[in-house]
Image 1 (cartoon, rainbow, N blue to C red):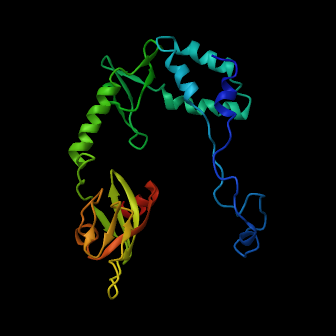
Image 2: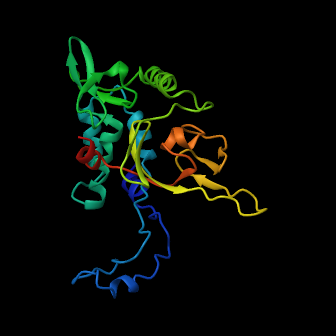
Image 3: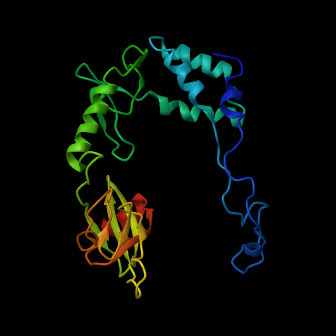
Length: 258
């Protein structure tokens, strides 16, 4: 491992806007707290911008080596007493699966995070490297590409190819302007707005539907990327479109849908 690996990964400018905006209107309002930090009230905060590709490439070069030796080199090159450098170890589990189990001579690895179950390694499309539970050797997942092709074929069979309009997903009506739509297994809260009528000899007004990803007029949706071109089939009533949408969390969905 190169000696400056910690600097290559961590010491990189943070992403985000340089101008954060003026936080004085919020800090002078009644909604503020009694004790405020220097950054409270500003919008568009910066985020971490770590360059993890050198770490990933180095781990891929360590295949067929004992994981204990690889881990020792990591601890030797990265100081875990340093808070910034210790954060690198959090990302190691993103590239190496260390919780593999051996069942009837076959390696099983954890599936998706929300499933909390094990799946055979040959069916995993997310594990690239894993530590063999019996030998402790760092090995690559040789079934990765086949598993990805299989998952892509399953999605194409379920939702259709990217060149065709995918079938409509189920939805729940929350109120007159709010609906929950399920897209590719995730729930989204959609706020609807009415498409206005054309006045006099003016051109037909066009609005962008964020759910179907197309422009909408009173006649319908122009080439929708998802769902139906007919608003009645998509939202249950005509002449409406999705004005904005946000992704819902698991806790929020379970609280309403159980």
